[in-house]
Image 1: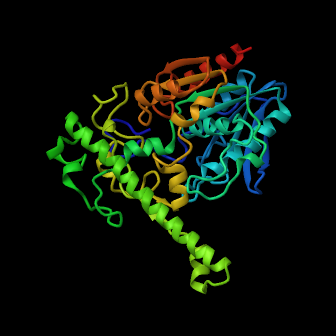
Image 2: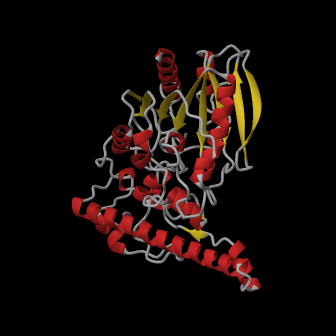
Image 3: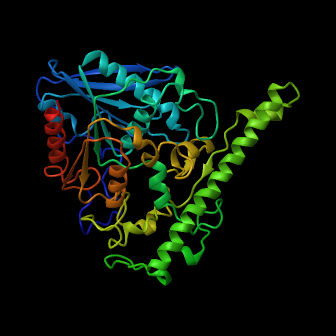
Length: 412
C-alpha cells in the first residue's frame, strides 16, 4: 500500500496481489489443485486448502480476479475450515466475460465442494458477492424458470444444468455488481466514444468550474451538479448499451445470411469477428473525491489510486476494452443480469455481511442496498477497520477473517 507523501498515485504496490495472503497457511496445510471441468466444456481451476479433518469448506471465487491464494485462507484453515479458492475461465480477462456462463464455473466448484465436505459456505469477496448471489438466484429458481439467454439475447439455457446450492453465504467487502459499480464510476462528460479526451466541460467532475480542487484540498459538489451528473452517467450507459446491441445485431445478421446459404465470405467473417469496444474514462465517481457524499472512514481517492482525476485518463480501469456481449452481461448497470438488487431476493441462506469501514470501492449506500435486497431472514452485519482489501492487515483482513470463521462455527 502506498504511504502518505509517496509520489506513486496508485494505491497499491502491486495491483495483481491485493487479495493474496500476507502470511502462509498453518503447518500441516495441504493444497490440492483441482481441475474443474464445467458442464459446457470449459475449465475452471481450484486450490483446496485444509488439514484433512474439516467438515466445512468455504468457497471463494471472483469472475476474473486471481483468488488462488486468498488472504482468508490461513485464518480459516487455522480455525478448522477448509478453503476452496477458484479461478474462473476468464482469469484476468473481462473482455469477453459472460456472467451467465461463469455460473457453470461456480457450479463445478460447488459440486466439488459437496463431494468432499458436509457443509458448503460461499464467501463472496468483492465481485464474488454479486457472482455468488446471481448463482444462488438461478440455483433455487422454480423449475424451468432459470434464464435461457444472456444479457445480449444469445441462447444459454441454464435450465439444462445442475446448479447445486450451498448452506451459508458470506459477503466480505462485497459489491452489488460490476454494472452497478460502473454506473456510478463512469465519466458522463465523454462526448465521443472514439476519443479518450473529448469532454463536455459542464459534466466534467474534475473541472474547477464544477467545484473540483486538487488534493490535498477536497471538492464539495452542489446537489444540482450531482443530479445532472448521475442522470448523465445513466444516459452514457444507455448509449453504450445501444451501441453494443447494434454490434450484436449486425453480427447476428451476418451469421443468418451465411447459414442460409445466401451469404458471402464477408458475411462469414463478420459472423466470426468480434468488434471490441473501447470504454474510456471509468474512474469518475464523485464519492472518491468528495467524501461528504456517502460518508465513511475512507481516505481520498478511488480504488485505483489517490489521483482519480489523472487515473481516469490512463490505461488502467474497469471495462475499458470489452466485447459488446460482455459489456451487456457484466459492465452495463442497466442490462447486466448479475445485479444484487435484482438477484438478491432469492438469496435466502443464512448470511453474514462484513463491511470494511474505510472501503474505497464500496460505499455505505452500496452496503445498505445489498442488505435490503437479500431475501434471507438471517443477516448478521459486522463492520471491521480496513480498506477494500483489508489493509492494514492486522486489524483489517485478520480481523475480518476471524469474524467470518467465528460466524461460520456459530451456525447450526
